[in-house]
Amino acid sequence: MRLVLVSAAVLIDPDQNILVSERPLTKSWAGYWEFPGGKIELDETPEQALIRELREELGITVKPQHLTPLTFVSFDYAKFHLLMPLYAVRQWQGVVNSKEAQALQWVSLEKLKKIQLLPADLPVIPVVERYLAGG
Image (cartoon, rainbow, N blue to C red; front, top):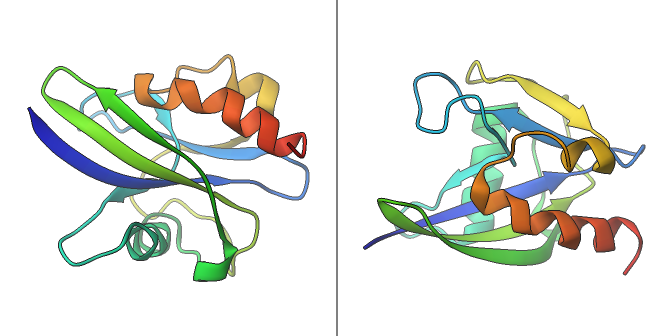
């Protein structure tokens, strides 16, 4: 099975809301919500990939020291295996904007539990809950 390496972020605003983006109709799992991020390219670290992806997708600048490792996801999809380091991000420069025509929304933890997240993102919810609670 093919291995896909992806780096993703849980962006958290001052009100403890979390940013999610909707997968466009042109991609698999269209209509599902996910944490921002993307594929790690050859010769990139997960942190470099995430900083690049956040700039390309959302138009924000994140410094490496503002990436807090949260967890990683190892998940089998039908056609590939996903390995995804996940970081919490509370500080960035710029205004979050959709640069790739994807819908974005800031959601509370309670709403995060109710929206249609990608299957690989579902196990992250308890980790985010502990992080927001200070644990």
